[in-house]
Image (tube, rainbow, N blue to C red):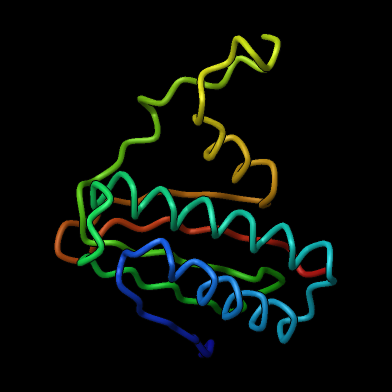
Length: 139
């Protein structure tokens, strides 16, 4: 059976540093190199920020759980919130061909998570919460 490590924090943006430290430590212990640790940290930061800003509408009294574990050759991070459900299929892909000054602010989070991680899945599970599951292959 895999060993899971979890941190639970309130949905305040100030907790992003605590989450980043926790995830980075777990990624290093799992054998990821420093480039991979940085990529995982960035992806988790995006996922947690999305939960805080969208699932909880910026309210700081929500619960956010970040769980890390190794499964086969993957380092896995599961971010769970209990706010408003999210459907990634309704989010349009960003238009990266536009000049920076013509692009809308934001909207790159899902794109970045997909580029930084080997696999990203979303699940809305009612009582079990909304989950973002991200996998990074351990080299």
